[in-house]
Length: 421
Image (cartoon, rainbow, N blue to C red; front, top):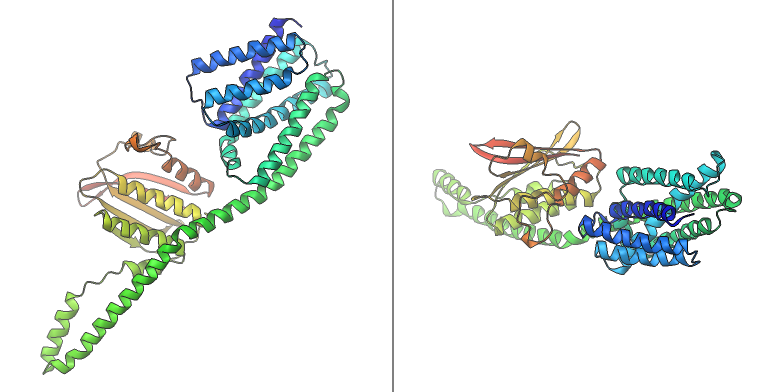
């Protein structure tokens, strides 16, 4: 096979690597022109190695690809190795499936240039479909959660599949004899990983739940202290009222003094309202936000019409959703900050509605609020624009709905975000 033919086939491999790795990593960290330049340079070197029949060219290409990814994604070497292993697992699975199709279904000799070219084009199409419908970036982020056992299994599986691709690469003539064994091994590896993934995800959910409760445990203790303080205050009021019949000479004076005293007492029903909720974690979250609002001079209007928070979402997901909405409302630019927090039932679901005073926003702009990276806040403090995007994913994952609109309250415009979940 000529060098030009080898270069053409290798270019398809390089393009496939870029398509898959970009999805895993969430985008390039350098300009597309530099990606193309580095990719062409990589392709020239690898094609030359194949043309010269260098036996360790497969190993060389793997190492060069590692350094290429470090350059274009600007991540540390361990993050890149983790991503490259996962990418190669997917790459090897697709390559082996195509090889099986060509050798056993089409009955063609996969050693010819044109058959390989067709196979490479088909592989590129499959890569694009995978990137479209599989959240490879979410899988990568999950792998980075430092679950050592799960990472070990993934690495072992990727290594096995990597070896399969290597074997098929250097034993094209004998691949037909072993292709069924390889496919069975691939299916076994995928099945084992699927089972482990289910258990790992369940463990992660439990860990997230424990973390959420741990984060708000001190809040619950603070609420208990405040309740005790209120109880002490209540006892003092009762004692004062019980002394009035002794001090007052007649019923008319007693009635007047009791009226004056009770009118002077400021009753805060917030604590009582929050304690009626049947999810302690939501009670703790709302209590924290109420206290934060007091410190930041934000007026909160709390309206709770249902105290039963029964949803498909996990507790830590509810904390993230409600916390994100309230934080966004607190951070919104306004001369006098007023925030409404409403919890009620609608369409047999729990509705969380957060409203904050804000200038009128056009409908087209409102639709962009939940796009990845979109933000109306100042980005100077760091990367912004992922809170509402993540919130939207959580809500739809739990078969909920998100609504956003402008609302008028006493002649002022408010941005209203309602979650049905």
